[in-house]
Image (cartoon, rainbow, N blue to C red; front, side, top):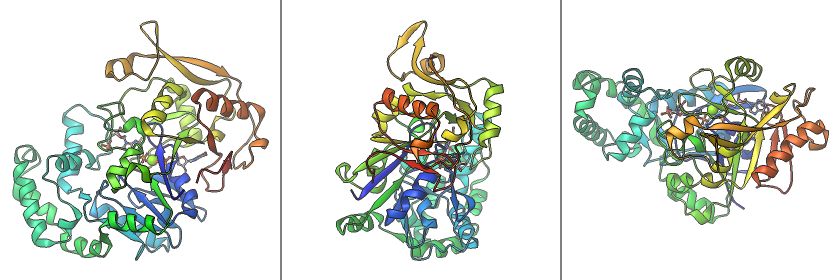
Length: 426
Ligand code: GDP
Ligand code: IMO
Ligand code: MG
């Protein structure tokens, strides 16, 4: 089983980084296939807590290759900062990082447009990293790819075209000459620094697979933030679902062997949008402080809610999930009772599935099943048998209601703070 895709099953921040860091031990390469530095993946590496935004989490482990496939959007400045950041931790990515020549480049005007839209139009609560505007340019076929970025004459041409063809909107940011100057600031050095990493990652991955290498795909964001199947328009502009790995890295669907979803034992979301099981402010605040629920990228407080099985059932279907890693179970200790949303009601009537309509997503009322809570410190536990009986019941109930095996239970942020259950996933 050489290929595993790790996908966020909720609205992001499920603990994908921790799982990928753990699973990377048995991978040859770890691949990001969508998103950009809107992601914030936290890992505890050699006892230190680090958040990575663009570099795949596996790059922290010696000898592992990190791949940024063509589906990723890359801020050259952000990436170089991150390369320097890990270098300070004595981790060199030299010879171990592969950036797709086809990946699109996040330009300074993308970031400015993102911020401008957030302040002048309907705010979505984006990370303001320029992700949406960069993907818009990609779809509008005026984007700049890494192949252009590392080729100065091509870059200048593409930049002129991008600025001209989107002139009307960009004028809101300032004079075209000013925008161009900004885009060219530090350009030569960045292009030089990134050039050695840029390759055809499709050929690299296919070659690896044909020689039996094990490849791990690290999804960013989560299924409910997917552009197509998430809570549109309160979504990101890429496809975090497992299918996104095929499109975003150039693999055939049959080449993905396994898909592991990652879900918190409760739910969080950052930014605007529907959130049926959101807790009242007081309770959410207490849990936020206890669990440190602040964004790894923007530092914003995360909204908090109960576990939502209607949402998760949808994620299992559209995300392609075959088993689940349930994270942060330790956080639920001391909460009595525990609530699981098992159904929704809309205008008094039961709703069978997570609704597609935005107005319904905002209006549905959760129906909860109450389970007895558990107490005591389960942090770092590694054996299912040692969990308090109520914690076991919670896990088993979720597993039954979802009809999906829970293969991992995370009991702390550290890579080893993990319970493995059932047959090996990968
Ligand atoms: P990602 O974006 O999916 O990688 O998740 P984030 O890193 O944004 O957020 C997850 C947070 O939960 C991070 O601070 C992790 O260190 C932390 N975390 C992950 N798993 C566990 C766990 O089982 N227990 C606790 N207490 N914290 C965890
Ligand atoms: P990881 O990979 C949580 C959210 C933003 C906003 C929406 C659109 O760490 O799980 P964008 O900047 O992408 O245009 O913002 O998506 N969002 C995330 N929320 N975790 C993330 O990444 C996210 N990346 C984007 O908060 O609601
Ligand atoms: Mg995150």
